[in-house]
Image (tube, rainbow, N blue to C red; front, side, top):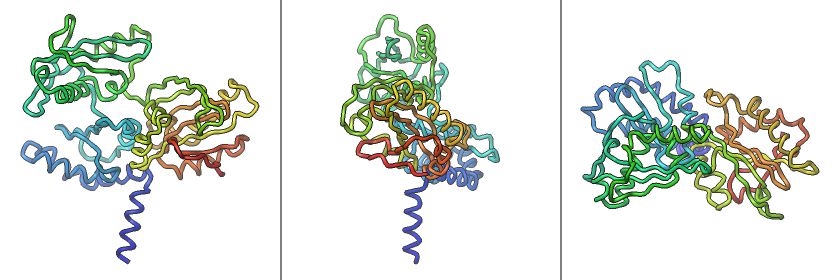
Length: 370
């Protein structure tokens, strides 16, 4: 009996929806809040490993291996650390923060901008400061991205991989992980100062100015920015290879699909979430009519099914959509797939033959039954 109960618990943890996992995290946090607060108060006397292991008991309720930083003044900051899919999950965790927490905790979904303040990072006996590193910048308004070149006397002498690692950490802490992911296209190390270079502490202000002068908006999170993509459709190809154009706020997920990768999709699933594509036939409709219907359905999904984005009560979010020769697609990130299937019944009378599939290759569409 004990073996069966343990197997049931393990299976439940593996299949628990992201919504439930986040609920478990906050219940754990409230239950252990006094102990956690004491660790923050005594952080100078307690080893870092003890603090990390203790807080990991909570973050493991969501997914093992989540990175975070615990700072003074009750600050808890998640770190994306190169796992792009976390940009689309971590803000929901913060939105679910209970009002009943006793202490004045500050939670952040990723590394925030240092807002021009200086700091130092040291790795393998090599240290560099944000104010000491000099940066050259080239902005491409068409791609809305930046090429950066950096120089620092200590980083110029260090092994290239180490120098790049330190610079990326400095940059992500300087302008924030979100802006780094969205706008930094390439980074190059220089071995001599560049004319017109400026301290890394001034990078965010320069980026904001360049983007504003180009008539564009500066975004701090990838999920806030939707971009257009165009493809060459293939007849009788695999699912979704009929796409002509689409929009998305998760470029990495769309790129993964056409490259045959499942990195982001599997990362989401490991946290109990799921990226899906809701499709319906274009039929005899023209491209414009199909697009208008897709927009109407997207509006209904956000208003009647998914819930208000950023409220902490939503069960998912809209990632974008696409129009193909054969089908129209609505891309969604579901925090609770079962809840979505139940609430999506409100679409049963709209006359479309919906198909639902995971947004990764070799995931055949299945009829969405109401």
